[in-house]
Image (cartoon, rainbow, N blue to C red; front, side, top):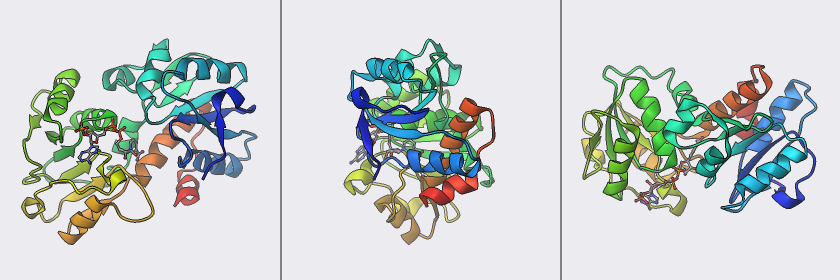
Length: 269
Ligand code: NDP
């Protein structure tokens, strides 16, 4: 568990993650392990910011001399609104997770970070079932579409899946009224159902034998999604690798040096 600072009481530092809640974020441990490995004199703090206070909080952190900030739930849209210079991808997915304070600039490293973790995945046909239609679903949908995947999307609230497809202009993406993984090489869970230990209504008996079930969530014990996928004999992957990849990309954007990804992964495994 992190030491959490309220933004009004934030100490001096160079980097931070803001969120609500932020106590469980693995980012401080991950980034500080890289500073230690590379002998960089930086600090990375967990800073609590309530919704509606992102602008004020970032103003204060800038005044304290902070250089970069990562943004977690639920502030990625508010952070995008703060930025004067947003890269096109962040604008497209309406989410900024990495900020450069002095330049009021932002990027989204979730989408390319997710793709980094699929570098070793070479399915015969690039077909994916995407579960969810929230912020991370937007990033993953764009990443998969740009990597040439045919997308099928299922969300508990179907109208939100429709809004996602229309808002991102994902031509060819199919919206399903049941979570049917038939024909899909990849099944990605971007919902937060596992946070409440809820099972998703996935038709596991229709999954392809060699499919990869990928849960964006990460925690010590397997999520209900990954337990069900393992029971079906599928390959599984959790969100730890994506967390490292998005963090490593933030690090490199801020500092212009490649971070030790293996050290970062070990620090939070
Ligand atoms: P959002 O709140 O934006 O979206 C939540 C989604 O989950 C919605 O589609 C919602 O459906 C669905 N949902 C929530 N509860 C249930 C349930 N009980 N049953 C079915 N569907 C449900 O969240 P985010 O997209 O920002 O984050 C989602 C998850 O991804 C989190 O667990 C987060 O930790 C993880 N994540 C991991 C990252 C990593 O680096 N590994 C990066 C970013 C996110 P509805 O529309 O019907 O409400």
